[in-house]
Length: 113
Length: 114
Image 1 (tube, chains in turn red, brown):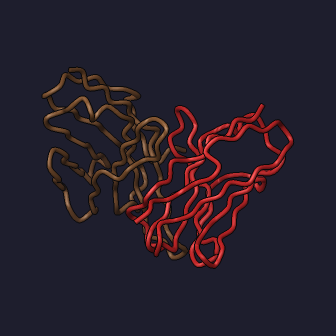
Image 2 (cartoon, one colour):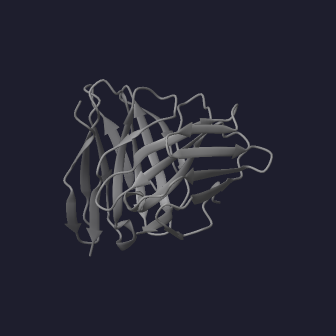
């Protein structure tokens, strides 16, 4: 089985711009979660989608949004980028929304200048 | 408010010795705990997990211990190998009607010296 894929792997944007990141889960996985990783902060939960519905949301401002398509692929959007949004954005998929083991993609490294 | 804490940013161990990584949590609703390992430029990979109904789970060289009364878990790696050098994240989840999310610690960098 192919693993979780994320595109693009690297991205450079400037303040005020918006960005869309994409995630394709493992085949058969219907739950997709997004995390932000910054140095010293570990992984911070952004949101989780299951069957095209957002089922859980972390403590991030409304500039961070996401969606999930019928094929379970997910996108994450960040509008009005700030310097502090520079981070590694990780997508993880699992079979269902019951928590437990998630499989992570390699991440998208976003740099905001 | 960090619900999962890994108080040691880094740990250095000699090859062949035991590595002990620690994790503390504050939320008594957590009922499932996981350890992930992360190499640079890769996503975290699942290592081992433990349910709150157990106090120990073993998988090869990796053992996780859970002390619910102390809200503490630890990962033991015996014997440590240079390939174990990575960032280790402790994570926890609580059951929820609207799905679950993993709460991660900040990570511990493990360096195994040969």
